[in-house]
Picture 1 (cartoon, each protein chain N blue to C red):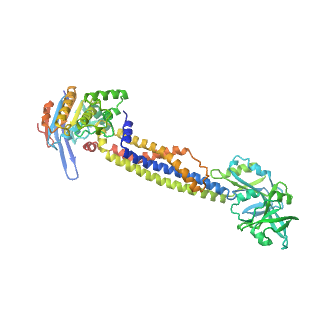
Picture 2 (spheres, each protein chain N blue to C red):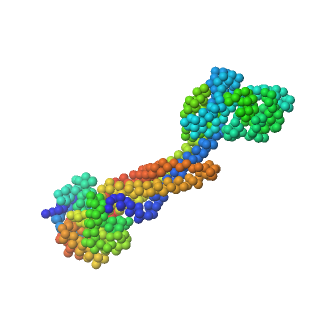
Picture 3 (tube, each protein chain N blue to C red):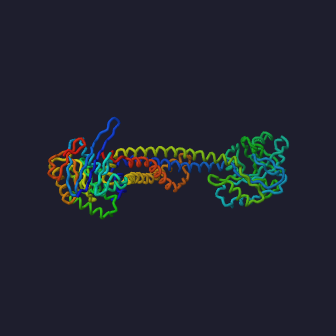
Length: 392
Length: 222
């Protein structure tokens, strides 16, 4: 028989004590594993949603020309398009090393044109924007359209200010460069420059403006939960040497703040659980040492050194901690499967498990067990042999 | 030849209000293979003397030399080793570990030795035979009678073959028949060259010992 056999028999046969020691640790480990798994998954879910909520990179042609302003970003004057981007640049962006992080690429062709509505309100200058509506509506989740998104070449979507300025209504006709277009949808006021734009299909705009395969700017939404946006910018710049690739830092930082808020909350709760579980283990082991004064007296009487007594106590706690870590990990793992779909409000959420959490669980449980029991164990070794012996 | 030399041994216990002189300037020699009974009323200092002999309570003054070793000059680790190698304790209320089986309780002193498991097992089986408990090795302590529990305690005290058995009222919780059986076991081990120092109230047990020493108020009176 070795010292660890004494610890194992103590755990095995003092069932109530062992149960309360292990259950405290299991609850702690399971709670922390659940919190961290939930936190990681919910953050990724938030990140995925946020990344599709507006662009975080704008690509414009390199130019010295006077710029106009679009969505808070400076872009070159479309009248001097000596260095325009091209439609195939969109495909180039999707070849970068971090291409999996690229969510939406939305190219645009801009031009100020004279509009002649059929209602006779007179010619007006308006900014025409050619877009790929499929990408645009994914990028602009806030868009609220009366009517429908254009699906044909001669259909346009007009901003709320354009509607007022030109007195246009749904299904009314207007003329641009002698081509007739019908208003299929009216964009509700967004409070941005989109209110003063007319949107049409990109291909149609390229034909209309005689700028085949050319685009004025490209908006990109990159998934940046755990990717450095600067690297994506650098990689994009290298495939598009004639372009300025600019990250919209404010957008990125807002996303990161939103994403990490829940993460910080989880870490805070985990820290509280850590302290509570340490107190549970400390109370349990400390009470156990006090109760076992007589037993310690027996150990000393048969010739055990103080270090032997300490080994027995620590081995007990370490064994209980390891057992609790494994059970707690499994419980936390299973619990997160039920909690994540509820929190993300999406039953189809694919749950990403971090198996390194098992190593973390073992480390966490051992650390809690060891730190909380070190004082009682030292106290046991400092027990005056006379006191222990008197209790016999 | 004396195995144990006790020289001017004094032990004072101090509490907040008073100081109690439990053992008062005792000098005594106990020979190898001797069976000594320590007699006296409660509070006469018998158990304190036994505790000091076992290296568990440092004397206030004086010294104890066992087999040429002044035990209270030893460092703490070595005192534990002294207890393991020289001393086997037997207590009035047996003092067995309730969550361990009979065998596991007897294994205790061996669990910190360098012996292999088969060597340990052999020693435990031998001692179980000597105390007539060979069929009860796998039982838990609470499944045994008082006499059987005391035999387990004796087996545990002797399994690592110590030179000295210190017994504190070993029959105090037993009926007279079982007490006689336990005393016979002590005599058998004494015949096997163990030195035995036994604290008892029962003057009837003088007959088993070579010498009886009586204490009163911490002093030797006989």
